[in-house]
Amino acid sequence: MKKLITVMAFTAVLSVPSVVFAEASWYGSLRAGVDSSDGNVSVKDSGSRWGIQGSSEVSEGLTAVYQFEQEISTPDAGQPSGRLSYVGLLGGFGSVTVGKIWSASYNSVGVITDNSYHSGSSQTSLRHGNAISYAFSNELMALQVDAVYRGADDNADGNNDDLEKVEFGLSVNLGEIGKVAVSSVDNKDTFDPGFFQTGIDDTKEGVKTTTVAAEVYVANLTAYVGYQETITAVSLAGTNTNTDDIREDKLKTTFIGIRGGIGDTGIDYVFQWRQLKDTEAPLHLSNPKPWSLGLGKSLGGGASIYLEHADSDGIVYRPYAGSYGDPDKTTRVTLQVDF
Image (cartoon, rainbow, N blue to C red; front, side, top):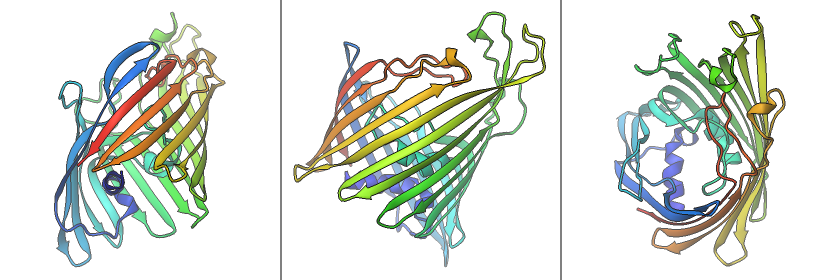
């Protein structure tokens, strides 16, 4: 587990801008398990990946860094998509990276509010491609700003703007007490969600998400809390209401969780609870309160085993989010081997 944490720490370049890595290294993590979702049993992958990362000293005080990471599907040996792929420069000014990176929102608040093994969510961007990112950190704080541009095939919605999304993330260390963080995401995408309701031809004009989070350390226990508000601006022009008004749909989420170890057993636990409330557009969401509880133990030699149960309590399809929720009840046992 410690080796994997070290690997993931490098992917968040902003957290270690002053570190110089001597050479390239291969790494990977295979994670296969058995999943029972509402009585249906299947073999599932839980985020397996392989990658290469490294650095090259360009001059005194300036280092070139790079990383490529690919998903692996353990049930069928497939490689569904790439997770990371970037090059960058690292120095006293911080770091500038270009490619597919961990997002500013995840590196700041997501790492606090998403601590389940499989079923939780920070509801932030995880990674994004076509990005230019600047990051700086020291012992007190970590800052990251991302500009995400459209790929060659990303203009299907008719929006020809090159800039797709801007993200900002800031976390402040509170020493042995904990840390606080904030992120802001301005997603400039548009699309027509008219399929949601017959006769409606409204258009999503952009999504803005703000998240604040904090974690507190008490002995070997960490408690965390977060609050997120997502505002979707929807143009009603051309609808059956014949109006040029803009409607704002608001999704509010509260995160609460704890994680730590159980005595000297070597067993780790994590509990996360989320309350989602869609006050402005109640048809889009059924106000669920999803929670998850997980137990994990290192077996040695890079191997670990995890058990997690999640109850999503009725998440339904959300057209403006463009995604489905998880099944109502899911239990998964996963064996993970890191190399």
